[in-house]
Length: 144
Image 1 (cartoon, rainbow, N blue to C red):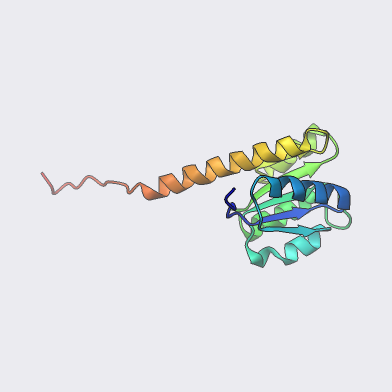
Image 2: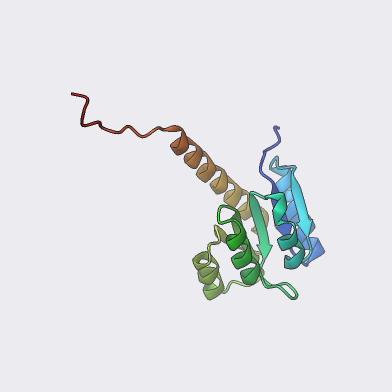
């Protein structure tokens, strides 16, 4: 299996959940994974230019929503996925409104949802890359 090039940050204050997500994502071929147990340390590491951040909603001093806003101010192109143990529709709606790529609930389906979200990110990245390769053609008024 080829290593996938994306740099991924996992941010969760629950060590079990963080390790479960890391193991699951490594199993999908991603090796460049950095883990954080709080939002502040993740924000301090943004200079390392992650491509994707899985961000726990409920953490100590910095909530997932606050970290999301800060990440998007730093670089709006980072794919941020909020991960939460609660199925609160308003939190999901707010996270998407603030620029999250997706919202994933921590339950027995978590590892499957991580795979689905990562596949969606890859599809979007491929689509954006293919659009950048196409050069626009301008119609010249002088070439008849």
